[in-house]
Length: 261
Image (cartoon, helix red, strand yellow):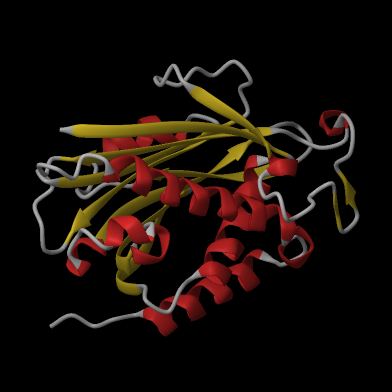
């Protein structure tokens, strides 16, 4: 068994509410043609919104050529099973903000777990990619995300790579984005959240242990690109209403929906 694990810590200039909105917009804009949405349902219970979805996607664009040359094409076809919870919480005496809590897994989680999760001022996400053709015993990808406002939060991984969002991409400058100036000490001008992303690849195929680190690098770069676009497109999503974002998301679902008999 060969395991490659990498954790990134990125400090972003948003509130949790802004992060949720920006993430919806960025996800819709970055959706690729090879992604199929198998299921998407949403239900409300008081101040909780529960969303469940299943997606089928091809990881091939994020896997290095050297790896793709030695693994079957079908090894890149995966399913993503997700369940999310959004709660409306009172952040302070000035405004009511929406906070999104995500827990993604390949099984439905019990409501008691949801109730415990959503009370925290954070965003939690566990993504397990299940290959459609091969057992998880031979190949497994897990991506965990933790977003909060606690500067002292400690992740389990002792080797955390801290990244300045302004240098996420060497060919893109994020020092000035629209009306926002991120030069110098930007912390006093904007709110701060902390995004922790851990990518873990496990390979249990004789002679192919080396591919775990290569795949990890490719997926990590894609995750960092997502954060770059979330910031870069700020002026595009900041003034969208919740109804407009919902309509954008619904259009995406209709476009990529795939009926399974």
